[in-house]
Length: 255
Image (tube, rainbow, N blue to C red; front, top):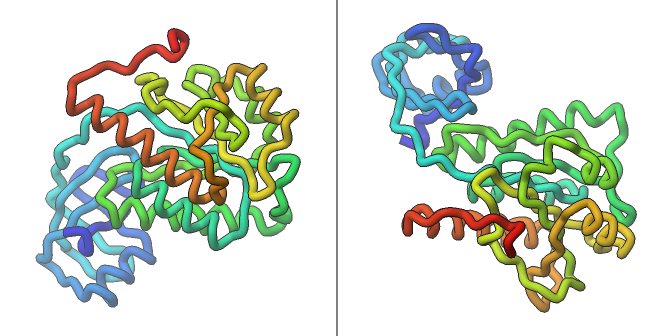
């Protein structure tokens, strides 16, 4: 029922009634041409899914008869911190990494970042990024929507206390050791990807001093968006394998 799947913020769901946002209502009414009595699927972006029946196909669509869908197995959260790159490639990365299971995106400003977003355009860009991850979540069947944070200076990322509980990695083409996904703890992981110009050695050293593990993705130099997708795929494959094998996640401090 993917085409009949709609995002409704949790605050727009009350009791057995859900009110679709105008953009979602337009898609339901004018694109899919659904009508009163048709069944649909909803998700609130916080991990909850519902089925429902269209009861009003006006601009604010009301959906009734809500019931939770089966909850997915819990998985370690995955945060992607990636240097800003060209808009089209960054947005492609957001879409595909959302489909693969990334839970949060932190755009980074590093020494060699060639992209800067003017302050007056930042709000519009954040709204666009949110629409992209929301649509990707809807399309791929996720019940949650990844968070996309405002751009952050790399040094500020290293100082962020809330991230210290995660298994933290920086991907660097000069690293001798390949990325080992099994280091990802059950509490989650943070993967840092640099800009097209690469990391400055001082940034890699600072990350190491802050407790990050430095890994490579192989002998070839990957574009930033390719590195992000490869890293997410590796991480999620390991998680799926661990769950299937009923294995636990090793403590990275023992690696």
